[in-house]
Amino acid sequence: MSPAHAANLGPALLGTLPSEVRQPAYDRAALKPGIAHIGVGAFHRSHQAEYTDDLLAKNFDRWGLVGINIRPPLLAETLGRQDGLYTRLIRQNDEVEARVIGSIVGVVDSQDNAAPALEVLASPEIEMVTMTVTEKGYCHVPSSGALDLDHPDIVHDLANPQAPRSAPGILAKALELRMASHGRPVTLLSCDNIPANGIILGNAVRTIAERRGKKLADWIAANVAFPSAMVDRIAPATTEADIDTLEQRFGYRDSAVVVGERFRQWVIEDRFAGRVPRWDLVGATFVDDVTPFEHLKMRVLNGAQTTLSYLGVLGGFAHTFEAIADPLLATFIRLMLTEETVPTLMPVPGISPQAYVEQSLARLANTAIRHRNHQIATDGSQKIVQRLLNPIRDRLAKGDSIALLSVSVAAWMAYPIKASARFGRAWQVADPFAERVAAIADRVGADSTELANAILAIEAIFDPSLAASDMFRASLVAGLEGLLSDDPMAFVRHVCADPTGARLKRPARSA
Image 1 (cartoon, rainbow, N blue to C red):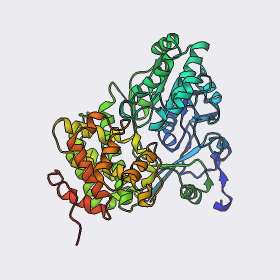
Image 2: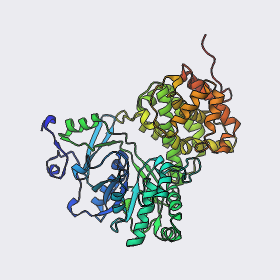
Image 3: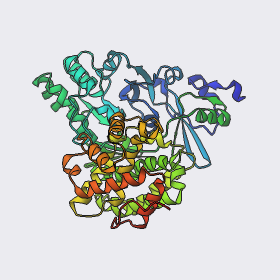
Image 4: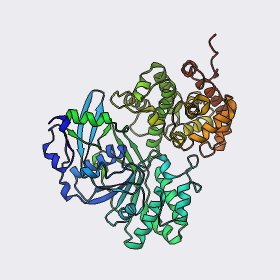
């Protein structure tokens, strides 16, 4: 089959695919919905949907997935046309492995109107709701975890409970509909990179529910579970090159293809309401406490990703694998993780923190995973609390150095500052606080002390007790001074030569 005339993926094509393309090992025609997932993007398709596909092949049951998007993109235009089928490519340097996933049995677009999503979520067939709506989708205050009652979508949802816009608002309304119709229990499982994500989700939904009356709040307490979970697999946004690679290598076209690394992990708090898919039979882990696993992944792998994204952009690198291949940035990341991050971790049974560091750095060096630094940098204000600020807080409590971790926070500050008028709007920044930081930079000018003070005053990101730390403030001032200079990598080199921060200041300019 010539790539120019390649057929599109769909049920009719399954029997004609090359033998090396793995296919669903169960009867999709017999599959019934039991799980709803909100936020069907590349990560969900390369992670939870794949675990579910594995489970259906091993222990077939009523666990078909119904995908719901309440934000772009439209699912009907991709997955819908392919009857929920899509290809998951594993890319490991020069290796390519293709697998068609069949666990998605239906898709629902609910971007303009909550009604289609509510119909699915309130259905008695649905016993598990999972979600990947990104950190900002929870409409919470990053520094405290509380629902942001001033968030425009939350203000709307509290005033218009019949037509919610936010994920917490839609879930609260769906639970109200379940209570009024059939009353069946349900588990709401967050799969987003937020510490204690089950607690954050539960707080958000209950806060809305409590404003609807005691009856709904009491029903939720008795019939709904909000377990926390830790998820891990690097899955960058799909590109046209990925679609073309599939077509050229395997002879068919798939507009919903996703690319991921070989590594995957899913740790779920063993706290459910009603029936639960036995993902633990296919590699997931059910535990009493997810927290140690969360800290390990968010502070090490995600902390490294976030740091590399900002320093990588400042150093002129487009992708993570290019940034980690740079000897200076590789040295800095390894020093930061080993010297400052690892000592803040809780013990994780069976896992050596230093071995995990090395494994994480090797994963980030995978040349086939073309994860753009600007993509990773997206919504950084929603991520740095758990990835950088919490370990900094732990270090400060013990009087330990934060010289390296502070460089990462300063890099997060420098990234939107470079998007200000002062720097000619070097790039576009996608972050809820980007305009506010850029406005601060335009107002304050080049004074690094004033810049640091003004940004630290954003309480939604920086808890006042952390912002009050003289050591933290001084480190950020030095970091901004160095990273906003004409040679930001000279500052990184200087810090690597002095990892304890004993002489942390901007290196002298060359004559």
